[in-house]
Image 1 (cartoon, helix red, strand yellow):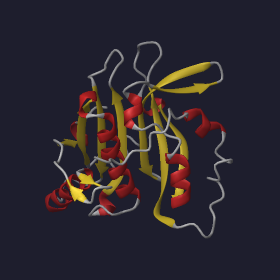
Image 2 (image 1 turned 45 degrees about the horizontal axis):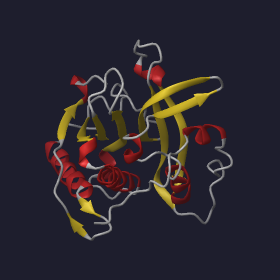
Image 3 (image 1 turned 90 degrees about the vertical axis):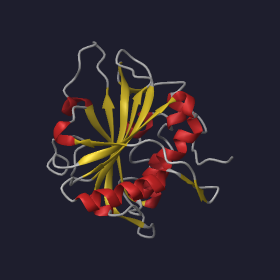
Length: 229
């Protein structure tokens, strides 16, 4: 079975911080296809001391994209879920280094925090995968959703605020899984939430290179007013 994965080697988050201009992210080509929205790539840092950092202090912007070309230049340098099974993500800054707990992509102007005004009345769909699920299979789940979110092919797309890939495989609070989340803005419209869940489930289960729909993995609906990161 051929699955959609972009895992040639361990990616370097340092490249994103130091070489943003070299990636061409600051000067989009007029001929490049524009995305419907501008998107910001974030990382969430783990504490080195064992004491939890406030969530707002642990999140850092690392890149942005508003065209298809910019997206791929960034995406190709980010680790795939299958790479997390063997190695944790690490961000280096001078002599300091921090373990990265999560990668996030959110619409420009929306922070990857449930307290953000665009998120606080919403929620997210959450998928959890053990390493035994198969790293390349998890890659396909993650890539399917990321491409659909940024390509605005999920419906209703205007509800979606961002996506998160959370590494809970190891560490003192490790739960032994990788978590994928799709965040949206409004829980009050039950019909729209159900429509979005169906769209997300169909997307994540798509065998992109095989042209068929596979089994839908278990999903949980989380309410942000009752959620702590």
